[in-house]
Length: 163
Image (cartoon, rainbow, N blue to C red):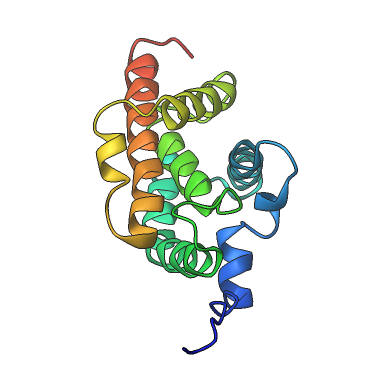
């Protein structure tokens, strides 16, 4: 009988990316911490670089493959389906939510944050089903769909001048 060996630790780049540079190691509510940092970074990009909502859709699309790779590596090393320290998915989902805004000003920031967190936690149909996609893709995809739900609500609210 061969001795049991532990799986190799995830590569440092995967750990840093999956935890969104350490946010995933927050002692309480790491997903909320990741979302909050995503909102802060987005606000800075809007304020100082003039970003528009569509920029965040592009950013989320570009980040999808690296986030799925990192989530896969960390989940494999942890031997968990969706480790709490993986929060890059929350970051991408939060940016997808912001992409739905008509304007990035005033009340849209807390609305985007709260809507995304609610959809991410409650997981309405088909979010739960999307989680079953293989490895890191499933980890990331459910938050992308939660972000799409939040984006839709933000878009409709903006069209009716609720913010």
